[in-house]
Length: 502
Image (cartoon, rainbow, N blue to C red):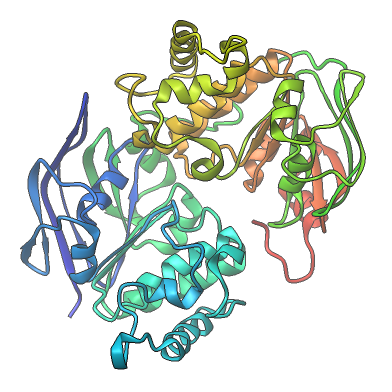
């Protein structure tokens, strides 16, 4: 029999915020239910309540007609509930198999773990997913995408699984891995499992979901079979307004000045070669397949990876950044792809996360921080970038992904940089927040800052960039003015045999 999960009047308060307001709906087995809504609409909060991470203030949820209350994730797992969060929750030092069966490792005489059995079971699941990894591989040695797949396989391996929820599962995956995930989702659907799917990618929702439930400002505003609602109707319900063509409505009028950044034959252990320039007020987009080398270019520029050849010139002067701190002091700053591990300082307040990029200027010779100026920088960032938080003392980890990203941008803009690097800046951000980000990026370029934009979304690269560089095989293989480019041309330049655009 298909499983059923029913939410009844779920309400959740945080200090100064009503995160969920009497949310009621039903998720049924045998179908894929997509949750859609802007960042901060309440989707992730609801999943955390179901998983026992949070406790609701009012309301209840029923699993197969039985009222449940999970005090922690362990209780949820025991009841057959699996939630795959966007942030990875795995043990990097353990093997793939150990991660998959952690907490239920088979043991024999004297409690000794049967590792052969663990790896045998795990390898069968890996082969079913069609992934090029071994159960004995250490998770720390895997790519971010494969680490995410380990999370998914861990939930899939549970024999008592009744429901599985995915929160932005494809954000780090390539085309082949996404296909594998969708195939497994269809298998779980056929077995009558409840499948809840959170994504901001409209095409992905269309391909995967049977029904969509829409959230706005902590409220459930309705659901619909996916084939009975248009993209425009979805957006209107999510954001309360018609966004129209996001890119055509952008004000991109600006002056493009002289060359600020001149990269000549740059090489690193992870980059074959890259040469390009960025001008004042110019947005230079980097396009290409997953692992084409886009991030490796900017890591070599900023000193995150060692530079083994070539030169970097900034404002006519040769520079060499051996560390990211060198890059910051030279006026080159970067908003990284992995917001959780490389962007935010999770337990630190919103205000200090913004001001931390300016510590050199805030500290005196004895290292004492000017707390008044620190608070001013935090407040300026909150106001200038419309960061939604009840106060600047709130831990940044409690904000939505979009507001965390705004805080990181505010941090680096407070240092008055010459070059701003944005690596997948709208990853995991809803369409309403994306529109706000796009306007923000255009405004930054108007200030005369050179912007390097790395994105796996072709419409984003085309809609924001003035000029686009295409990478393949760890080197730049093409350049084209954005006004003259099409998705087909970019794909033609980027494609390699058997590769899928990421």
